[in-house]
Image (cartoon, rainbow, N blue to C red; front, side):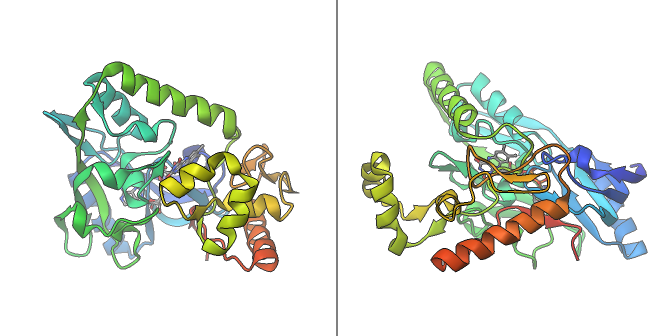
Length: 313
Ligand SMILES: Cc1cc2nc3c(=O)[nH]c(=O)nc-3n(C[C@H](O)[C@H](O)[C@H](O)COP(=O)(O)OP(=O)(O)OC[C@H]3O[C@@H](n4cnc5c(N)ncnc54)[C@H](O)[C@@H]3O)c2cc1C
């Protein structure tokens, strides 16, 4: 395993933002991961695990420690189950499943990043979530130097959350077993295409981290929201959906297109903050903070970030 110095992290994030990592290591297997943590312990270094950098806002000052880039990317098929390493790009996992007509991951079409990042944050879209197709997860625990295995039911999955996101669990996700089912080639292709087109039409294409804020569970505002969006009313009532998109509050607060420096609330989707070209992490962070206080002031609603801050004191 080679440790590099002074590597610019903006090249490793979908935001195209982030200062230098003091130390940087690419990890392809467990042995290398153990080696990296030996150094972390010996030198008492701060560290963080980086996947595809698509849910991370890395400070302009960078990270004063070791950045561990997870690149283990194996995938194996056992009938309808796939054992997938955490460093595999999520889209590659979906493509692999599609080749064998395995369904269950189509909702992930267009979500950037790697499998490990998706598991940690229980990624989801279009009514699907990764937790619904996971059987078990293997992790490495740097404290005990042991590999652990969690059954799905032990991982405390909930909306954009899991036990691995909890600060007390500083474990690195190594791999997971996905339980899928066989479907028809044309149905899988149709769904994937439908989601791909939806994203193209409704999401901004500029650099971003996807949705900045989690959606809100609030019955008080639901009626008002559904009055404004009568086209989805039936679907909401039928499926008992109580979550209101954070985008709704941001738009209602008059912030569509609002800009701070090179950071802008996307006019296309108000839960995306886009990098207009040369945005600094600081501008994005200030805009996030401004949106939170404006929405709190207008509606009494506390927006909570989905994006992870890295390298901020
Ligand atoms: C255009 C766009 C659209 C998006 N759409 C969606 C969407 O529809 N639904 C959705 O849920 N998300 C969406 N996202 C957000 C993001 O893509 C997902 O959250 C993704 O799963 C993050 O994976 P990553 O590898 O990029 O994580 P990173 O940003 O690299 O890391 C995120 C966090 O996970 C930790 N981490 C990463 N890998 C590991 C590991 N192996 N073990 C332990 N911790 C780890 C990191 O330390 C960090 O704290 C979107 C993002 C973009 C840019």
